Length: 279
Image (cartoon, rainbow, N blue to C red):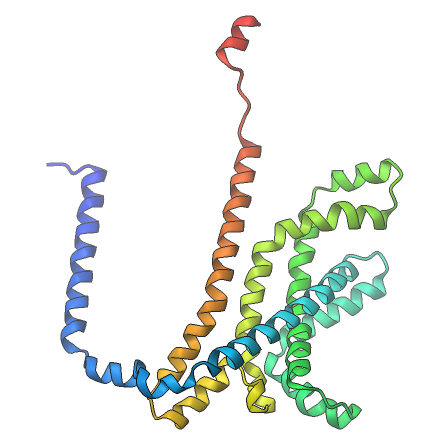
């Protein structure tokens, strides 16, 4: 008896579902759930983290990420334009900057600003200034390449048409090319904001006052302070998800909208029966 493709697919799904149920049943039997609860969900001793984990840890993390992303976006836009400039020196400077800061660990930038800036330039940066500057320096290198890809994706015919009408190159770039490029690169820029949110945890390497602590530091300190196992880290991770999950949903929504618009543009236009009859 020959099996159809549908029957084979149903059999494969049934086997996978059975294996999944077996694995889950084995885990339910073997796992020590009391130990899991004590280590990861021991909420009672960890409840003293509230509301400080929200008012300090979450708020500080959002501040570090926001200012780092805003200044990184500005710097990345300038670097992208320099990378595409006709003057070769601008291209060399932008390329050197991008390759350097994409090639070194972000933690080195935090250390350089946290300790090196005060020694070399006699600068006393606050925790917010150090975190935002470090995130902006690293983020701008990645954002620059994203924006450059978006600028190159804009059809050149639109810029050429504007130039043919007498529009200066700088005005065509600002009014035509850059707005369309940002619409193209919004989803990857949202992903970059998520990465900067996680990189903000590196501020712990320079030390900080209690009121400037971000989520990772509060979770790490909570392990020893509250004797609640890994529950403080679970709480810190949940707070990170409060930031990153909405950003991920926003990125997927923008990607879906972009895909829908592209499919509508590519949809062929066919004549209706009524129009064919009139013709």
